[in-house]
Amino acid sequence: MSLIPWSPLWPMEDVEKMAVSPIVPPADIYETNTTVEIKIPLAGVSPQKVDISVKGNVLTVQGKMDKKTEVEEKDYYRKEIRTGSFYRSLPLPTAVIGEKASAQMANGMLMISVPKTVKVKSKAVKIQVKK
Image 1 (cartoon, one colour):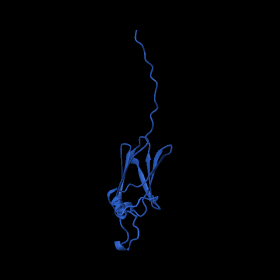
Image 2 (cartoon, helix red, strand yellow):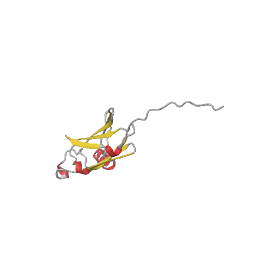
Image 3 (tube, rainbow, N blue to C red):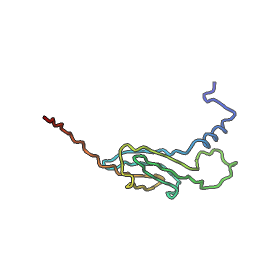
Image 4 (cartoon, one colour):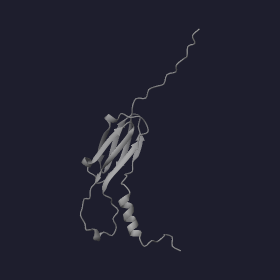
């Protein structure tokens, strides 16, 4: 009994999955006292090919991963490095000031910092009874 189901079309299934599914880069999101920090690995992507926007408390990162080298397709044993457009939309965990967001790229890691809005403290209101 085989542990891995075999299909005569398995090479085509892999190619089809890669061609149909969009590139969605992974992301880490965490908060500090004053900011929301986002890290997205984009190794080999030029910063000029990345667009970042913040609308409300949703961060959107999109761009294009270009093919760097040309090798004839028939020479590949396995082809897993994807190229093409990528898109990621991330709801942020708290209200932010999108227009003050900043981003930098270092060692293939895109780092985005978005300041949080100042939290308004709630105030208890007493009800006065009129006589």
